[in-house]
Image 1 (spheres, rainbow, N blue to C red):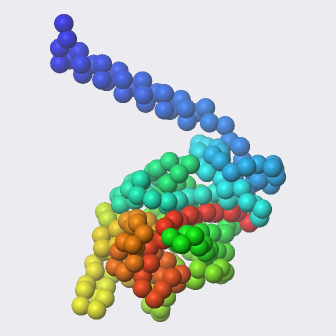
Image 2: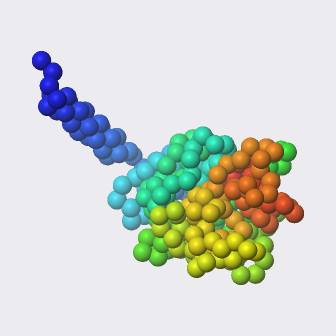
Image 3: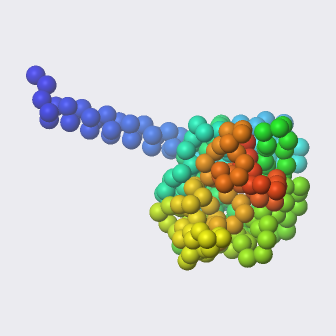
Length: 260
């Protein structure tokens, strides 16, 4: 005879088994290199895909997607191609990561932090709805510690998408600011005034987690918009130095790291 206690016990056993299985899978991961750059250097014929890495000083290996290009192996930490994965998440999700590594995902701030302990280059790829693409690269990319809200640090810019992280106009440089989410505000607004509109939290107004500075001119983690609904105030995947004059929401974006 089934009772409430019997059902509870079965559910508890299922949870314990699932937890043990997940922990076992994590323990069985075998590192293939410190990062995607090292993997590509050791194995020049390596192709793009999911790999297991273990950066120096990290106790447990973890999976990443490596984009293996002619100039080396890049560790992808953000990818957007559509609305299938919701990026309007809280601090813990952005810290630990979410999504599908082979599709749309955010790798996790704690993983990006350890990857950028090495001298690294950041690459941002953008795609529009007309088949065009552009990129922005930054030298000396690194993040601060969690107590520093994973503060953004980038060096020299090169590319053809424009330097949106430093801003389309003075006063909105996002370099040097901590990461903000709807439940953890680290932006420069108290409030920010845009015309007759006052914003206290960029993450609430712009959606998604990002390194906001007076909201800034870059945010690739906002809401995704389809063609025809992506111009103007609904430009939530924005890189304001790229398209214009009206704000433009990208069709797709990708952010990657290569160690130097």
